[in-house]
Each structure stands twice: as structure tokens, then as C-alpha cells.
Amino acid sequence: MTPSRQANGPSASENQPLSDELPKGRIARGYALMKLAATELPSVAGRMLRQGDQPMDVAVLKASAERALRTLGELRGLAMKVGQTVSYVDGLLPPEATEIYQKTLAALQSQAPTVSFEELKAEIERGLGRPLSEAYVRFDEAPLAAASIGQVHRAAILDPDGSGREIEVVVKVQYPSIAQALTSDLKNLDALRPMVAMLAPGADTRGGFEEVIRHIAQELDYTQELDNQERFRALVADLPGMMVPRPYKTHTGKNVLTMDYVPGRTLRDVAENGSQELRNRVGEAIFRFTLGMAMGRGVFNTDPHPGNYLVTDDGTVAFLDFGSVKVLPEALYRQWRDVAMMLVTGRYDEWRKRSSELFGMERMDPEVRRLHQDNMIATAAMVARDEDVTIDRAMLRDAVRGGVRTAKDIGKAAGWIPSRSKTMAIPPDFVMVGRMQVGLFAVLAQLHPRANWNRILREMLESAPA
Image 1 (cartoon, rainbow, N blue to C red):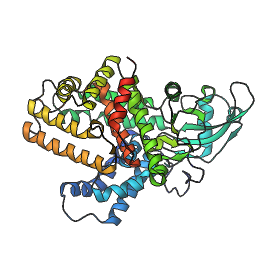
Image 2: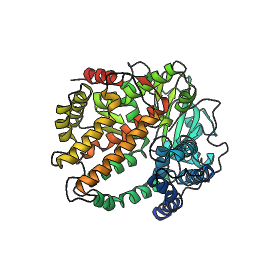
Image 3: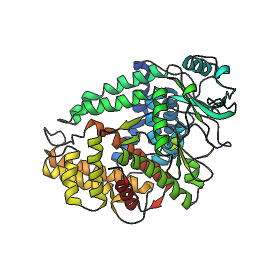
Image 4: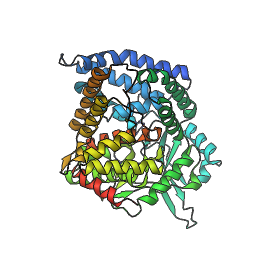
């Protein structure tokens, strides 16, 4: 969630046609999603299967995207997170649908439906255990931004250190009843487990599901997010081009988080209007922060998306949201780091053997394993090649298409519902790495940054603590 944005940007409450009613029950939320899917998916999915047909009508696509925006925005929670993903990850929709859906659903990154100030005031006072007027010397009623779990307001506090000075802050406040709504979403998600198990026979889907559900549920505890934020603030303290706003424990509760106000440009503005030099610098900072922390420290934010960054006037990237953070077991992240070093130094035979161990492919049919690994190498080409590479949306679309081709080839080699060997037994602790990597490169693709990512990654791996 974005705690700040440009002062002249659109307010989350401007031109907002969506309802502030939040469906909370499992049945009501599940029905709303099924209704949306039944209405919108057939034509889009059909177009994906009928490649080469006439493109879909623009007006039809726009109306479809606006219906999706309304439904996902009103549901908030996990449904809205799905909409946010569609708004910036390329390759999920047919080409003619991508631009329209992404432009429409981009509002979900920071402009979700808001709730009234009176409701938010009650939430703040409940979370902090004291009147709002005692906690803040100023509190702006109009929100700066709103997202899947809560909304953000600008305010001011007295310095907790006792200096008497006023500090400009932003306050994240959870929507009333969002905990109940998200719990309903997670129960609906868990209900899909048997279906996934049928599609992936022999795979340990239970561990992966539990990992995803646990991390999504963690986002409801802002005291834990404060601890995560403090941790990353310390990690970037001496790193150029990066910063994490200071959070204030004195003004934080389970459902309220207060942190320093950071003025800056949104990532979308930088992507659309920034110079190539700025986009390169911002892209490298995000790359170093995300993969650098993951491979060098074994800790990372699991949900990179464009709404989680601001760029200050001097080009520093402010990292904002730490609701879902993964700490890898030390043995696992060291194993991952070793495998990554083999890839970026071109030791492919070693990489195939060690990655087979890491991703649970030792017992896999040799041909299926080769197909998987060939696709992994192709997908990693942007960091595997020792040369300058521009990460852009076309590259991501090619990666998605390559994955679809690989799935078809695996189906031919092993059968579509084989009794063995189709899927990787990825360690549950590694599931969130995949989510992080998809988000990271989708974010970078918006910026079109150019750099020698191979050398940057090698440097990060070599400089990681022993």
C-alpha cells in the first residue's frame, strides 16, 4: 500500500464510483467472484485459445474491465490482490485485453473504494487505545490512497523522543471488518486445495497452500509489519539509492501503522515520464533491494507491486509495504544462492544437478525434468547473460508464452494427468520466492530499465555474508 504520492496526483476519493460496502461472508464473497468469472472469463479465455482470430472489440473489453474493477474493488482483500496482479503482470491476458485491463485495474494499486472518516476514526481509536485527538496533532480526513486491506491518511505527531517538534507522518488504517472478509477469502482459497492436488498428483500441495495462506493472513497484523519495516530499515541504512520510512511504535496497533511521510513520485509516473537514466537507477535499486536481500540475507518482501514504491527528488527509492515478509531457513537460502551463482557464471551442468535437488526434481522423468530446466534457463536469460539487457514487457510476455509451450510439451511427454513425474516437489518455504520473482520482474518491466543484471547479481552474491 502506498503511504504517499505526488501532491497533484488524483485522490483515492475523487471520481470514485464504487461502493464502500464490504461483503464479509464467505458465501457472498465467493458468489461475487464466481459471478464475475462466469461473466468475463469465457470470452477472454476463448480468445486465448483461438489465437489468430479477429481481435476482441475494444468497447466490450473496456466494459468488461470496468465490471472487474467494480467487483474486485468492492470486495477488497484477496480478490483485490488478484486484480492488482493483473494490473501489472504481462502475459496473463490476450494482447488486446492486456492494455485495457491493466490501465483500468491500475486504480486498484492505490485508489480502492474508501470508507468514511468516522468509521476510520473508530478503528484508529480502537487500535491505539486512546482518542485520535490525543494521538495526532493533525489528521487529514481525506485519504491519500487506499488499497486491498486499508487506506492511508496524512497526519502529524509530536516527536516520541520528547523534542516537542511536529513530525509529518502517514497512517495506514485497516478497513472495518476486513479481517472477517479476508478470513472468508482464505477459506475459499483453501477449498481449492483438492482441485489443485488432482491437477498435480504426487506433489505436496498442502505445504504450499499453507505457506500462501499464512503469509496473506500475516498482513492483518500491523505490529508485525512494524517489526518487518524496522528490520529492512536497518538493512538499507548504509545502501545508496534506497530508504525505508521510520515507523512509530507509539502510534501503531494491530490495525493501525504510523510512519514518516515521504514525498515522492509514483513508480507509474517514473515509468511514463522519467528519463532512461532515472529508470535505470530506480530499476537497479529495486532489483538490489529485492533479490539482494533475498539471496544475501535470506529475507524479502513477498509482494512487490508498483504501489509499494516512491521515488524522491534525488532518485532514492522509498520502500513502503512490509505486510508480507519471508525469512528463508538458512540452509535453504544458502543452497539457493549457490545454485544462482552457478547460473550467472554459466556452469550449467552443475546448475542442472543442484537445481534438481533444490526444486525436488530428482525423481522426475528425465525428459520432463529437461523440459522444466530448459524453460527455467530461458526465463532466466535476462540475468544469465553477461551483457546489458533491457527488461521490458515483451520479455515477460515471451516468458509466459515459453511457459505455456513447456506445459504443452510436458503434457505430450508425460500425459496430462500422469501418475508420476509431472510436477516439482518445491519446498513449501520456497513458494514465496516464486511470488516475489514474478512481482519483481513485472515491476521492472514497467520501467524498461537497462543494465548488466548478470554482473549486478554476481556482485550481490559475492558480497553476501559468508
